[in-house]
Length: 355
Image (cartoon, rainbow, N blue to C red; front, side, top):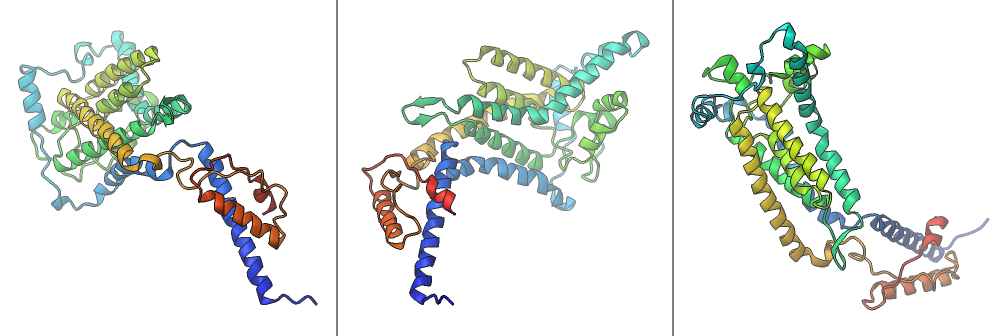
């Protein structure tokens, strides 16, 4: 029977502990090789978006009697004044007779508007992935990688956070409510309405949009329009080097703006408000990025932010399971990780294989 002494147990514990630490460093270096920015920096840039998602989802738990009164008159009154008593709602459906002759054209416009509204929810995230791939190996200067898609997501988070905060502080009735109920006081107990999207549901023979808008936590959030704002933000951040993408972005903005009015979901004032909020969020986001770069400095980049790089050439011939050799390896790495002058490439695949 083999007896293990206490010093041997302690020594084996230290060896196991150090193996875990070194393997953690190796895996961290590998992960950092695929990322340009530190986790802390990215989490800070995602904070506005996380705050927006939390506010949007949990606002429904606020008691109705604690919420502001829903404004059903300001937007239609101001818009009527600006448009000299006219209205662009349902345009151009309101000019086309709803007859058999124009049935196909009306159905085409209904589905085109519905498609623009539906893809709105996914285009932003696809665009963020595109920015990551496009800018992954690009830099704005020596050792200065382009901070994308994180700058876009930072501005995007502020845009949504400011818009939802406004919608909760100043709830406004959308045009479909004014069309159905006029100046009648609105209630938070009402479910969302698909408005013009109801026609798309009829064509699809499935209540897709009725279910989607019926479960929305914010029904009375007409101003500002995030449907109008998101395409503008995307177009602004589209790489200037890809001119066709900028053109597509402008067309996308126009189509979504038209769809928002055509489907009777927003007033024109809501669209203008969305554009103003984009400008505000863009300024806050880009200024915030500059401020963070000055505050965090060398902590922005992922590689080299926590551990100094050491050479693995001196480690290859050392037996990790030998207490003496392992102690030597600990001294080599310890001395080099605390050195600010030695910055060779680390190679520790042997440690990962031996665990």
